[in-house]
Image 1 (cartoon, one colour):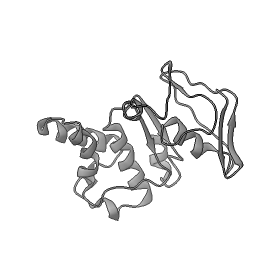
Image 2: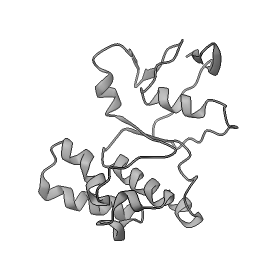
Image 3: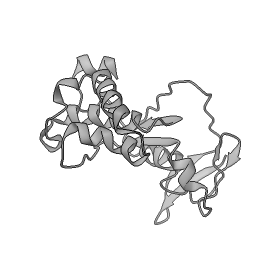
Image 4: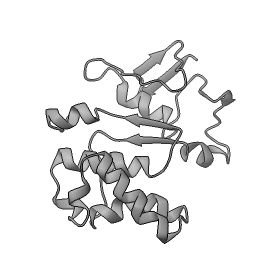
Length: 169
């Protein structure tokens, strides 16, 4: 409600009211500079609005409280130009489930399923830093899914992806 974000006295986002229904896919369209990325960063709890209230699952978001980390674990933002670790594709996707202490016996199956889902199964042992932009984006999607979030936010998810994989995304 009444979300405003300003940078150096320049208003980049001004929304009176915005709400999303559960289990829906929503697309935000607008020209460059319209505030789409800023909105996504606020919705992912990465930056705080200059003014207004943000609610998540009927809970008001307090950007100064200790529960922010718990909320961030439920919402994942895939940036427009995602960054991967300079290791294998497998280890990039495995990382979120590894830090959540998922048993090793389950990790390989989960990573394989997620990489297959995004069409990157044959790149399991490839160096992540040598992938194309579209391949990097698909690995980032698999990595986000490995977090098992309640919400996935994507900033221009198909910008560097070929047409066949745009359909898959």
